[in-house]
Length: 149
Image (cartoon, rainbow, N blue to C red; front, top):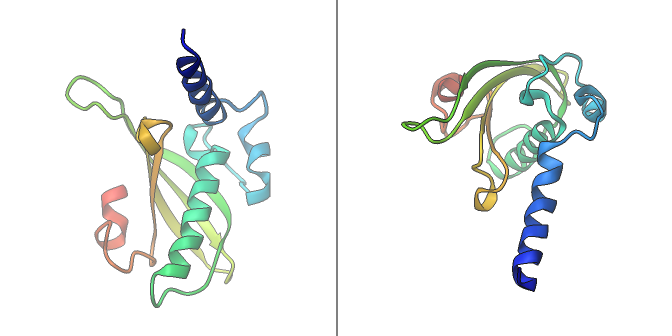
């Protein structure tokens, strides 16, 4: 194996390892800083998913006009309500998840999110799309986040 191929393989393994393992620690412990109270044990409650949503929500409220300046404080009642596995006709596996988020203004909102397997940056890792009810100002996910339900 050439030096370049070994380096590329090592980089690929380094990128994929944190996404796929929890290193023997439970998911609730990983997400303790976000205040996760309940989880159904699926990938929906994993730390990397919740952090990605929290970071992208923060970016959204700061860059979309006329949205209140709030942050996600914690996730509650995390659940997976649908799973569409990859097959010959549908090559991308999708997990549809829902939860309730508490915002920094004291309000609780429903959040719907989708985890697409193998659709991360350069097809490494998974992609997460989300919609917090009342924050889809441009109707990207249709009325009341209907596309992600």
